Length: 304
Image (cartoon, rainbow, N blue to C red):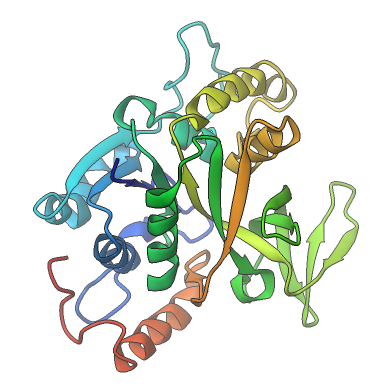
């Protein structure tokens, strides 16, 4: 079956200060997701599933969806606080989305084929999309998944902390462990994260991290459903307003239970993204450089 692409775009970008998914990054008015869509469609993806929130639906469809509907099979999935099993009790003061694992779980009813996953506000590169598409097309094991990995230091911002799935990879290229670190930052030329007790721990600058470019088969949904139920019963009870169901955490659980394997594909491309508004000039410059290098046409992107 031909793989599809899931784009997680429900986040409002609270640290950035606006709806960063529809913020232009070049003089033609392209937004960052346009370059991912251009690369993904050229790689072979023709079914696109957007995970959004109802409150951004109008803007999102006007800026993105209506254009892409003309060239691809587009579906919309809504990640909302109340998109949970019927018997689930939602904490009264909860406003924060349930997390990336929940975003993918919301897609269960519209996906029956292998699929890739990306964030809406990251640039992954043309080679990364081709790599994940080809891997999904060739896959014959429904319990083998894929992750495109990047070097940690190349994914950090100069303007604050970020969340990254920090990976350990076996000698033959399979994911051994992945640990979600929510407060990684640059400090004096080093990459460090802050532990819950406030201590700073240094990480190797070239360690592989996940930027949420995954390749899955539909078998992932069963594990996500079971994991989300545990999450609601355990973690949300302890931290009802802020607990998050992270996609990497569920992948880690499946690895430990030997229910799946994850082949790590090393990206040949540069990653960049907009986490804070101060990141935008760097992204604009990077896009300009890619156009000058011939990676993208000058002017409007073809068919996007």
